Image 1 (cartoon, rainbow, N blue to C red):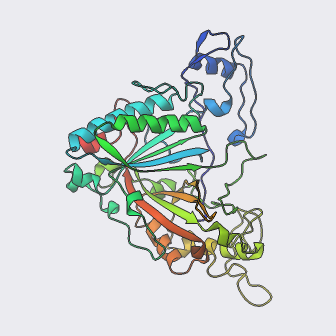
Image 2 (image 1 turned 90 degrees about the horizontal axis):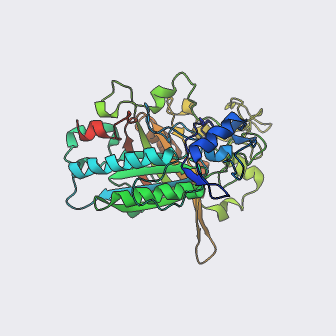
Image 3 (image 1 turned 90 degrees about the vertical axis):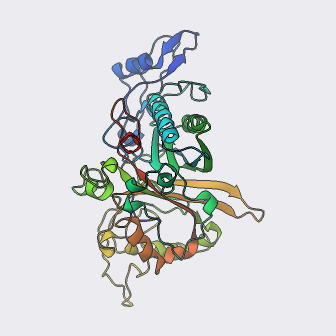
Length: 427
């Protein structure tokens, strides 16, 4: 958990499935959304305001939340720079015994075709469950990556990037290996729970006999439009979480997040590396702290995310400011101080997490926390130096536990007519 967040920016490109009107007339959802757009469907900033437009008699138009659509084909894969989504699923698969490069290529071809269809608001090509029949695309994104072991299984060791070397061990790790790593990684996000589950089920069914599920996790964020105005997200500790995330408009954003077009290996051009960590929050211990103690742990006010040195959420933190007793206003071990890029040799990552809650144990202790997901051009210059610094004295470390981990190479986006990873698997 570092002190950053994503911008909420979702292009609206209507292109839904078919829907039935209340009178039984079958109406293309593409026509329906096109009609709604032409007659004044309005989406406020980050979903803050939603208007309703006229539609054919007997039909109920989709809201802007459902009509928002991400694009599958492009320079980068979807699910990296889009805003936080309300629902998420993470899954890792291992190739089946005897499956190799040929089977992996066929699987990625199937997955890419399914992702393109579902993100456009269309049903899966085969065996669609119709779970999402009544919904639009709902900002659905599906992202694919390769783990360290994938290259052993497919005979592509010479193409494995050095940046995919296993992460070092950290003192805060309590990792469950059964819920870590994997040959293949899939990230699914959407602003509707049924749309997200529909995609997860389609991906699992597409795996067929080529791959088996290794682990799967579910997450959530605040729904777009739930606050009066767009705000930085809060985590399950109640903290504003993510004030200084790199922004797509920053001059060095691409350099920090994406592998350059002339990078090595070539098949990773315009791709990124993702670190995934299941971080359990010890909420019973955290909630025993006073408000002042919580704020000193974080280095920011709980109410608005402003630094303890003063100002608003986006005010630059004054690390040298002292109080009347001569001590630093922002404690030396405060999480926000330690995670600042200027305290880590400029290391920065694009965080795009989900919260999770997997119930309570027999004693009523919640199994809840953060599905930490961060993107960077090189994890050795992004995640690793920051986590090493946190490992040496972050005040937050006694209230969290890292229980699962994975590092995956996420290739650049697929061009029209291509599938994700084609340059690797057919190169």
